[in-house]
Image 1 (tube, helix red, strand yellow):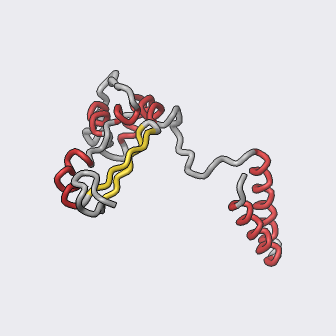
Image 2 (cartoon, rainbow, N blue to C red):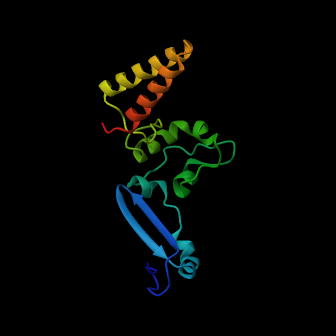
Amino acid sequence: MLCDSCKQNEAVIHRITVINGKRSEQHLCSSCAKDLSAVVFKLPTLSELVGQSIVPKSNAVCECGCTLSELLKTGLVGCEKCYSSIRHELLPVIKAAQGGKTEHTGKIPQLSDDRLHRLQALRNELAQAIDKEEYERAAELRDKIRAFDTEKA
């Protein structure tokens, strides 16, 4: 694939950005990537990610010195304590950026209630088989759980 910028050299850098569900791709050779690195590889601000202008109501400061204004401008927190120090001011920003969610839900798709109950029953049965030292039965149940995890909902 050729470089999107110079259209001559082979692209070695492939940048994919998804903002508000809109995906964009850029493919660059090493020399164009080096020339454009200040612009091309700049992190978007939280306002850009959320797609709206965010004005902090206060300028809370973490013990590391990071302020909410700084965080909104750079998109980066100063330390792990920022999440608790600036929590009150940060929650609305996180909600806006994460579609209303403030808890990590993971990447595994949610199972229907029926499938979830069947999977839990298999896991309980597996635990009982292991407790009773029924290892052949436990191996069968393990295989069923693996097959269950790979089958489509």
